Structures are given as C-alpha cells and as structure tokens.
Length: 145
Image (cartoon, rainbow, N blue to C red; front, side, top):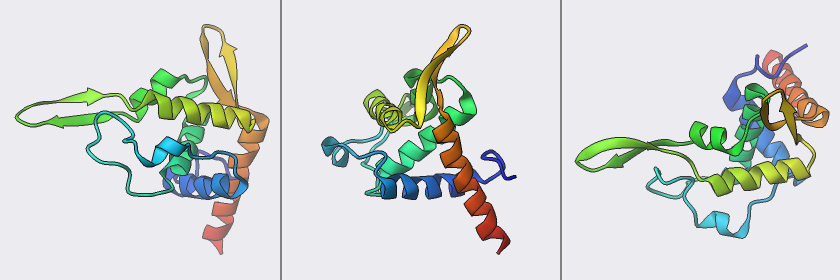
C-alpha cells in the first residue's frame, strides 16, 4: 500500500490542490487576489490558484508535523527578506492566510483540533487521511503505467 510520505511532496501537493479546487473544499477569499503571502515577499503570487496549493501544502504539513498550530506553520512558510544593503532577516508568513485555510480545512472536516499531552493543535481526521491516501495511490498507479 502506498503511503502519503512515500510519494514526492510536489506531486502530492499538485494533485491535492486540483482535487481541493474540484471538490470546492476550500475557497479563496475576496482579498486573496491582492495580498502577498508574507512580509518577506516582494510581489504577489504568480499562480492565480495559489490558495489551493497553499491549502494542499498545509494539509500535508498538518499530517507530517502532528498537532500543529498557526505559529509553527507561519514559521514554516516564512522566508528571508532582502533589505538592501542591510543584512537579510527572517520573517514569518502571513498569519491570516494560514488561519483562514486551517479554518476552511476544518470546516470541510479534513482536519480537527486536538491535544496530545501538552501539545495542542490541528491534526488530520480519518477523512483527511483517506483523502491524501487516495491521491497517493492514484499517483503511484499513474507512475507504474
């Protein structure tokens, strides 16, 4: 049986983004056409479907990192800001984007809030694991053919 972690991340995220868009599990908000994905970015995303790709990447990250919160994902998707002649500096990604995507994934029942001991955050539900596993199996079948 093919597992989510065995498939290349890029292939899984591309497939998951297409499926999220097709099933309308997440929807970009009105303001998403005009925002940068973080303070460290200079320009808007080039891809008009970037919201779906970020949602798919967050879904995979929630699976891999266990109970995860907004702050950890902001750090994961942050980056280095070029500051001219001054040394570069790390900035986190936009918290609003991460939070809204997490809320949409939670509403579509792919993730849920849970606590594991002292760690609390969002984890994949059975529906979310099934969603990603089916995509992994499809990718593996397409590769073998």
